[in-house]
Image (cartoon, rainbow, N blue to C red; front, side, top):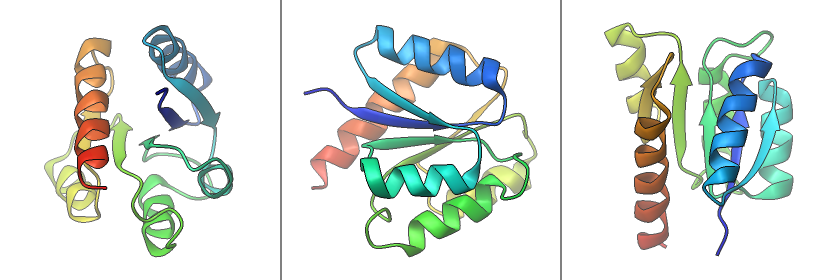
Length: 127
């Protein structure tokens, strides 16, 4: 079974690295460059996991996460925050808001991959 992952980031180079790396590992990857598109894609595509940046124009990652968690059709999708913000308060806010993991950029791809696999495994076990 191929898992579908939605990667959301306003930095195209980060999206390219994440998408290419995850596709190499056999994942089906779709991308969005803002929160509005992310919510639309999450509802239409029903990804198994969302990688979400915090600092984005118009709607930040926390607002996007809140809208995803409020919608019954997307509330159960696991989310990993992938961001340049390393402040403890932001990490705690993300975890309290319902993210599985918090990955700080720049990141080691192997570290991200371990968290992706763990989040997918734990979400498929809880179904």
